[in-house]
Length: 254
Image 1 (cartoon, rainbow, N blue to C red):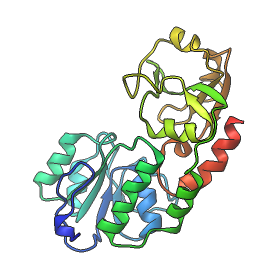
Image 2: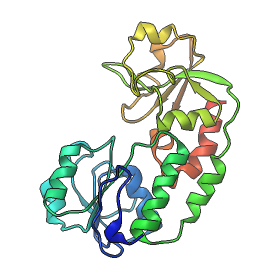
Image 3: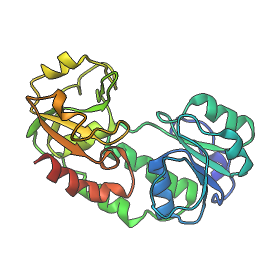
Image 4: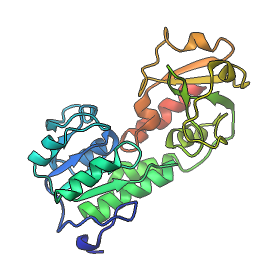
């Protein structure tokens, strides 16, 4: 497929010629993935793009509310976005200003995320599949038997938990943890605390992002469940961190 015919995960055209050299990433996971795999091409990233730790590029605000004037000033030949993390209006504004945008679909599973990344590396960047992606694919291929049932809050005030078809839910399922809300009609339900406490789950999984749950803020609400505090990056980021996440998450939920 020629770059001029490239479409993103949502079927929208991405009119780039050749391999992009000035890229702005509005997604922390993608920032890490592309910088590790095709270093030196990023010129801008969000304030929340914390990895790689030595990344030295222009910061363009947050994922939900990027400073589009900064993005445009960088004159990128490509912007990387995500259908769940970035607002459609911002994507359309960038496109209206002549900036090609590749929108990655909100991944519902580890295989779906790795498939989108393969497209970005092969069809957008024109590079060989990185070694870490092969390793992640091998590590996460199997689905372990269910050993625990869990509620997985991602926010409080109000309480928001993982529901159906989420990447983080699939990550946990593959290490033997079943999300009690995996059959819910919504991807991010908002049950009451009383309802959460009555689910019968034996674990409450508390990541440190997007809400920063800590030992003093989280476990006390669920006295009948064993708390598992873990890295939100390992739970929700698709990219090189998946390699380390496999062993870390398995150990955390034992």
